Amino acid sequence: MLYRIAADGLVLFHLLFILFVLFGGLLVLKWRHLIWWHLPCAIWGVSVEVLHLPCPLTDWENLMRHGAGQTGYGGGFIEHYVWPIIYPAGLTPAIQLGLGSVVLVINVLVYLRLIRLWKLRRAS
Image (cartoon, rainbow, N blue to C red; front, side):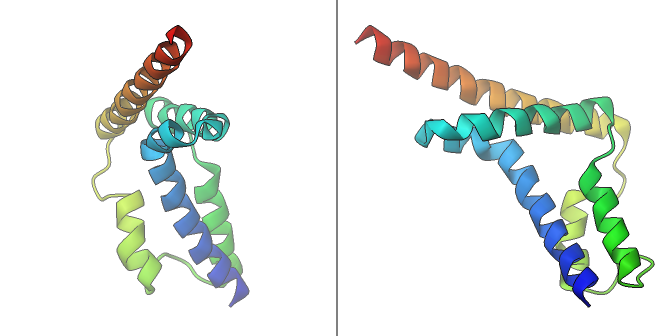
């Protein structure tokens, strides 16, 4: 049971990490110190999508599922509602490249705005 709870918690963390990669730059606009957390996460997120790198969270999730005696991801709320958001059906390398590009564009725009705000503050 403990492995099952840990695996479900890890799936939720995975989803939150993805959301932070995608939208964390907006938090940086408000709380500047988060740049030290968000920038490496955003770089990792883009790298995973563009270079098709394996995410270690997925391996940990599977290990915990096996530790719980499960063979798959069927059955629970997490698997039914959260899992398809993280790993949609029909995900191809071209779609991954597109997703990585969206993450990159959003974050580049946010950080360009942040740099512009810093320059305005220095000039005044």
